[in-house]
Length: 160
Image (cartoon, rainbow, N blue to C red; front, side, top):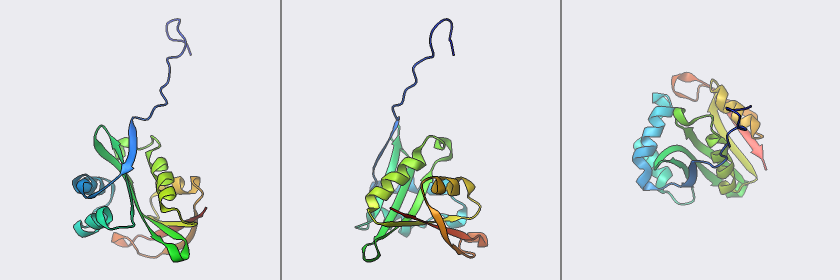
């Protein structure tokens, strides 16, 4: 494509966001992220959010863009079973389709460092299901009426 006799303008491949560890100071921004990304009944309560940001041994990573949290992933390990669980993955709607969820998922899997990684997702969340399948996850179970409102949870697993 030409622009007034010039070649195509250069495309920047540099990310404008970064993935860094999250901690208790991120409570307010994580609470906001939860409320924006999830249905009312699925938003984690105060103690769960505080726990995921403070309890030892948990994986907690955030994506920061212009000093604000725009994405988050958390996970826990069951070392005896070599099993890790992605317990939360969220990206603000305005920041989706930029590779943030994919990058968080890859970084979260690495941080969990387990042979098997599992997660659950609402059966109606087609975008997330597509993402997980694209990253090598396969459905292994269905938890009936798991989510608020009675929706099923699909359980996916990836073997690394």
